[in-house]
Length: 453
Image (tube, rainbow, N blue to C red):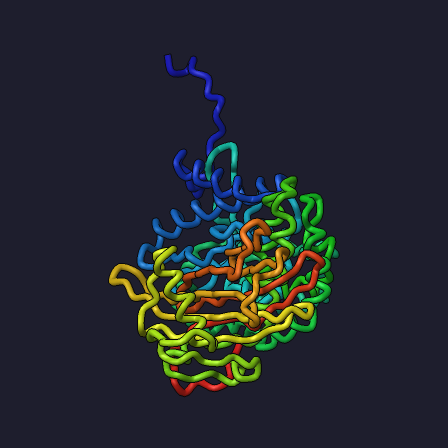
């Protein structure tokens, strides 16, 4: 009877690792988060490679701890740009999985980022052959970073114009068990990795004008980073996750015109958040202005207690405070501290109040809040075309405009962030005139010197 059964399935190699339907579903979800349809397939293969490698390692060395928290494939804004499973942590080692469809080719494609950028360089590159139709994969071989550097130097290997290296397959060690031995017995310092440059922010500062002009060209999915930027420019973008996240949002919203202006404004705000020193409003709670706040003529308000008269900035703010409490239900605690700055926007005298206090909840990490109140120094109504914008690294949080029919005397807004977040505030008019203040951050150190980026 059994000799009449026709077996149509192909026998898998004994070293093949099966991938479950649930894991395949997770791989599909990871791939669908990628805007580029052409890159979705590679992301899918990379995800299959990751699940297979995890199983392979657990079966052979379950004492080695795998950490995928910082893995490129878990971050769509990175996975859409770097087609490799980089920043995978195994014990104290960094690994990068390279998924391949088969071993018939004589060369393996490596993204330049995982070879030339210290942020993504691993101790070991691992080849994983993905048998997609058979729902399985095989860990084939590996190459250490040190060996790669030696071999590429010997033949003067150069990257292609689209930021990839073609590495000979003969460079790899096809004994995966040797990799297990290294992961168990070697020390990470035995394979020195390049140090991350300390001048990343300086390079971004020098390139921010050109990058602000070039990055919006990626609004079409037909264009890759390498089509628009030089490698030097790309290095700056690839090493700033906020810029990569902005590109990801831009390409995810392809075809949506309503968000274009907001994204353009946010790109400018990101550049300021990343390159400009920040005013430390945490010092205000200690009755101090840092050097940067003094340079920009911020003036501390006294303790927020009721005032008897109504004309000075302190007294004006107390009236505003009462209005916020009565009409908007906003309670400003007594421990809050504020400051104000008189500004000129296209000749219009404005006054910006900023008030801050810290928020502590037993269930959450400590947070801080920034309340902004924009009015005129002359106590007149705001110009009808005035706009107040507040951004953080993730996006534009507030875009508030004066409504002509309301005859607004003030614009109010409040934002909340964790202690490592910064906010940048801009005021603009319809004709394109814009004024952006240095970013605000919150740090409670009393003796901190000039604010840093």
